[in-house]
Structures are given as structure tokens and as C-alpha cells.
Image 1 (cartoon, rainbow, N blue to C red):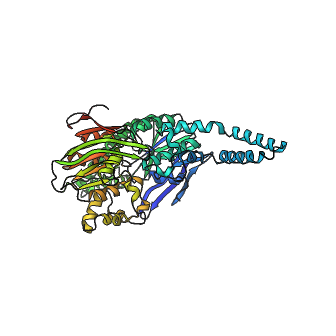
Image 2 (tube, rainbow, N blue to C red; image 1 turned 45 degrees about the horizontal axis):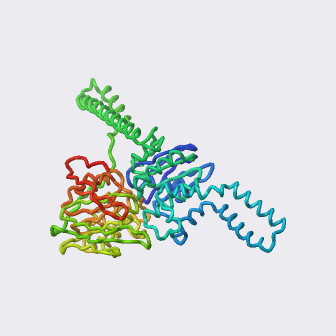
Image 3 (cartoon, one colour; image 1 turned 90 degrees about the horizontal axis):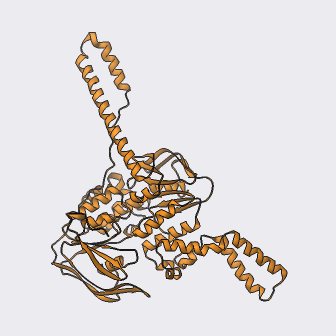
Length: 526
């Protein structure tokens, strides 16, 4: 069971949530939703005992707890297979003891040694040691790792794959309760569908924080929402939650409007007859009744990030020419003889599974890596800006939000920075909160603010909507749709297809245009 009892969490003067009570029963599958910064990740950390509560308590009872954070954690010097085996320390210890015993028995095969070996084999079998390799294979295959990946060092995997390593470890360990913070970030559609099936069949308790309603529709039986400091729960999946939420909002607004009309009628009576002695008792009675009424408010949506993206300076017609580009990581060929010409004001989206070369091609275009063969050449007036998949992880945790942004645009005035941050919902004291206390979504907003304040006329975007809540994602998509410069983007987010002028499929080293989309009708189905 997972629980919270009279739980309050404050950051300085800001109260995230107050006096929260919650119970999640064994075996339940729950989605935790709410806008960025509402406290979803914080609630998971409180239940995992990784952060202290201001008041009250949270945690779990009965069984073991596993927690997938938004930052990956593992030994980069271990191979992928060895890292998976760290989920079974007792089994690994027996295996190592058996290996040592075999060496000893080469010179001493006494009855005592044989009995000791038999006992170790029995314990190994009891702990499921013989089935662990098949479990590891099944999970790694589901998350789209190849058999060859098992012998690669964890440190050789890119950021998105590192998150898969952490997720694989958790699913292989199979604790009684699992907390998952944005597990679908960096997953392609195939792996996302596999994970939904895996979690639907998971025998333990599952709590998932995600902005992907479609994913929660497949797994969740209850939805918990953190909204404006309150925690509420709704029966059913995400679509059920949206329907119930809409009805609640409609009823709240209707009741507030009706109360407003009733109060206005009472106040008109009071004002009309206040000066009449014959009505003094009635006026006094109504004044007392009105004073006792608890005022109902219409539903107020949380503030949304609102920003625009400006293009600085006109660029030549042919913005970027990629000629004969091939690239390999050791023996892994990810791009093969790619040719591509990007023209002014095009909005190009690369789609395809993880590892298909999308991010590599963006990094080559951004000058982050030199291709094994070929070249990527920008036009003279091009001013490209590159937004990495894990830009939020590069933030300095010891700096404030304002300091972090100011570093990237030192010539910008304090007033302009504060104004820009306000558009990203960092108003007043929020601009001076330290980065280490931000949620994943808030860190993504800081990274976006840093990026978008820089003067560019070409945007290179690698999974830009990761970690963003629906409102901020919507604002970004809207801004990109009206952006007058050139956009080159790699993403698994189908929403970006709606702004694309050209879509390219990355697969088996090749980049192939799949269809053109004018923005006037729905894009073709992939």
C-alpha cells in the first residue's frame, strides 16, 4: 500500500500541496497528473522517502518499492547485461561463490565441498537464478535493445537509452510497488506500446506520472490529480478522468454563477430597503445571512506558459546542404550516404525508432560531432540554434532560474529576462528559485527559455516536447507553427506532424521523405 497522511510540502513561501491524504491499494495502477510544477515528482519522492515532508508523512507499507526518476542512475563502467544482473545481488553472490568453489574443487573435491556446491545450486534455483537471463532478454527486447547491446558499456549509450536502462532494471527487479516518473519520455511508439502491456499485466502496485493521456488510457484504473495545491482522485482511465473533470468544472461554474445571482438579489434588497425603518429587521437578517455564506468560485485554470519564437535575420533559399553523410559509432552504422537540402521556412520533422539516426543527424548539423563521411554546410546568413534532447539535464543545480538564463544571454537586460521568464511562468520569487528544486517540467521550461532567447533563424530541435505538460506543449506547437524561420526537428510526438511541411523517415541508416504536409489537412498516417 502507498499512502500520504496530512501531507504538506513547502518550498520557501510556496505551498505545493497542503494536508493531503491518499491511499493506493496493493496491485492498483494509478496515473498521477497535473500541470508542470504542481508537485507530481515531489509526491513520488516523498513516497520514496527521498525527500522530507514539511508536515505529515508519506511512504509505503508491505513489500518492496522501486522508483524510476527522471534522471538515470547506474554504473557507466558496467556492461548492459552486468548492470541488469545488479538487480539480483543475492543471486549474483551465489553465482560468484559457485565460481570460486569450482576452482577450489579442482584440488579438493571432498564430500563437504560437494554438499556445499549442491546447497548453493538449490539456493540459486529457489531464487529463480535459472530464469533471470530469459527475463532480462524479454525486457531488453521489449525496450528495443539489440542482443549486441548487452555487451556494450552503459556509459556508451546516449541519454534516451540511459533512461531505458534504468527502466529495464526496475522492470527486471519487479518490486511490489513501482513509482514511474515520465517513463515514456524518449520511447518510440513500439517500446511505448510494449511498456503499456507490461504495466497492465504487472502484479504489483504501479503509479505513473506522465502527460501522455493515451498511455494512461491503456493502463490506469484510477487517476490522481494535483491541481492548485489539492489532490483529487477519479475512477477510470485518463479519458474517464477528462470527462469527469469537465463535468465537475461545469457544475462548479454553474453553482458559482447561481450563487452570484442569489447574492446579487439579496444585496439589491439590502441596498433598496436599508433606509426604511419598517424593513430594518429584514435587512439586518439578510445582512447576517449573506455574511455567513461561503463564497463559491468559478473554476480557474492554472496559468499557461505563453511565448512566441522570433526569427532573426533573413537567410538564403538553401539553408543547409547535407551531402553524402555517413556515420558509425564503433561498428554500429547509424547513417548511410544521406543527402538532404533544407530550404528557407521549411519545417522538417524526422520520425523513426530510437537509434535510427535522427539525433545523430541533428548533432552533425549542429556541429556537435563530425560525420565519418560527408559534410553538412550552412548558408552564410544561417544562425542555427540547437536544442538537445537532454538540455534540461545540463542546467547548473546551484544557480537560480534567473542566473541560469542570464548566463546564456549576458547582453540581455534584467528586465527583458524577467519579462521572458514570466511568459514561462517564472514570476516574482519563482525566478530566483534554485534549479535543484525544480520539477522536470520546470527545468524543461528553463531550458526552453534559455534556448529561445538566443537570436536564431534556424531551430534544430531534438524531442522538444519531452517533459512538457499539455499547456506548455500546446504553446510550443503554436509558436512553432507561426515561426517564420526554418525548423528541423526529431520527435516521437505526432503533434509536431501538424506543423510539418516535410516529414522524413529514419530507418536502417537511411533518411527518406515519406509525405508532404501543407498544414491544411491532417497528415497521412504513418
